[in-house]
Length: 86
Image (tube, rainbow, N blue to C red; front, side, top):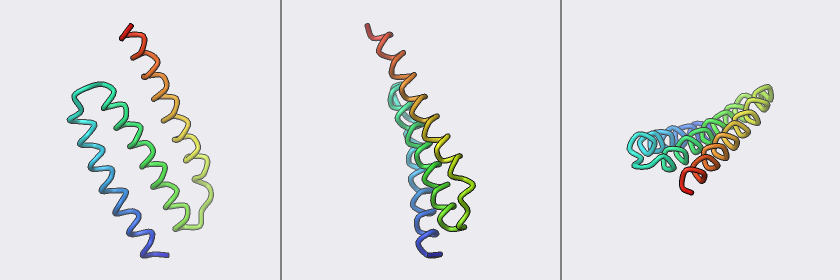
């Protein structure tokens, strides 16, 4: 289990670096929103890996909260972006 958790953590770190580049270099607002949403999903995945590695379920509410914040943030930005296009 230790090897799986370490490999998953390394892959999540690599994904976070790639997504961070996308956030910084994104030519449009929507690219940055997708990048931030992906970064929130990576953070929730990292918490899930930690919960599985440590057998600690107290971080599950944090995972749910991160998923909710990511969804609401993306929905809000896309709603206001649609208003600006019209």
